[in-house]
Length: 394
Image (cartoon, rainbow, N blue to C red; front, side, top):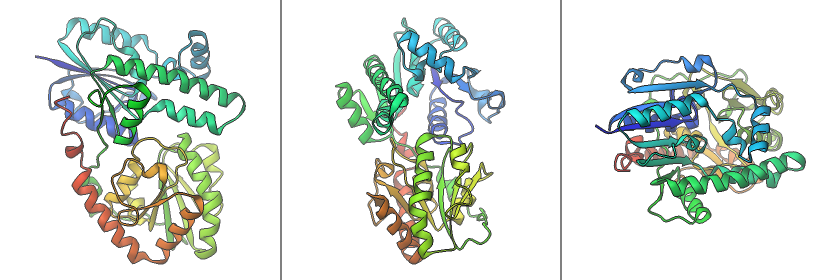
């Protein structure tokens, strides 16, 4: 009986951050179709040893702790002419595991989550390859290069250029390349000159039961009468830039009208730049929390003020699923099939962002109605069952 090899750049359980949420649900869907072997990286030994209720159902697994320092990956990239994104994820253990499986097991499909893992496709493998890029990563580095200066601009320009070529080569090898939205898929078709048939959009979903739970108690923040919320992994550069911009440029205007408002930045691993925002301009940095739903439940407005973003933002879908009004930047709203003013608000500029947040704080009934419409939209169009319905046929 045919078996599947699933490659992922992070352990796909528990589903506690954007990329892991997507990989987790893809993996579960594939496990319902066939025996699945998993090879992936862990950030540390604790993550390597994390259990999962369905782990015993896997045919086998190889979880390698990623220990290579960034400086070493950078040197190797320069010497080899490869992108740093690849040298950072090289692993003799995973290469050997994959080679052994392909030689000894009836692997007829390799499913790859995230471009870095495509380097492990054996050159002699003749079966089906499904590549989930999710986002066009190379364009992210191109954006960093355009916005930067000095050595980092050169580094990001090099990364974007090399990744673009790598992505194109892998997509030509793959039977299908998947992206999180039709906008990302169309962008890649043009960059790689590939057909609609080979490049497809498979969107992110939401666990409706989890985000509709009625027993979630709202978080409490002393002295706060209006809570504005941002959620996300807080060592991710676009998230860091987003909260810096919002705290420094939007919150002063919000506070001038709503002096008891607070901007909560909720998410694990805040960088030093993020920590320095704490207690400034009504900003509160929480770090990791036990249940993100308690903070979403407490929020009056959820914001996604990203200046650089790719694909679909889970933070927006999660807030909408909990019937919260959302103010998103143009790029953070991209890929979500919702209407401005009906399901969420989309701000083209920072000034508009501030105005929209204040509008919602001043008219909570308006926000409640918008949230109700948003929740209905998510329930009807953004369940994982709906989004992954075609995955078995691919």
